Length: 145
Image (cartoon, rainbow, N blue to C red):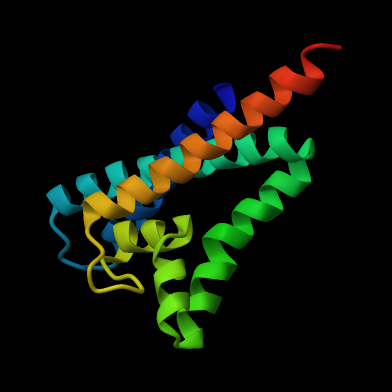
């Protein structure tokens, strides 16, 4: 949990610092309330991403493998599947954690039926699944030795 809290806190602090710097030099006109809600969404995305990385790392017994899998699930597969143009690929892309993260950040996703609640649910289910599977692997094999 230390990894998740640290990652989330650092991500939010860096995003807030970047926002303050951009606001100081670029007159974007973005209301502060939208910035605060965006930071909350980013904190949720960072926390879910960190939970997925830890969970998949425990499951695969490899930190690098967990990180690569999360990068693939968040950055590569959603865009790749959405560009194929088939109904099944668009549906599969909408259920990946990267699509949920993109929807929470930009308000757009591969599916027109995606909402904030469905995006958060998708991220939370992926994060909880990774942690449960990783904890099961840890307790079953490594903790008994």
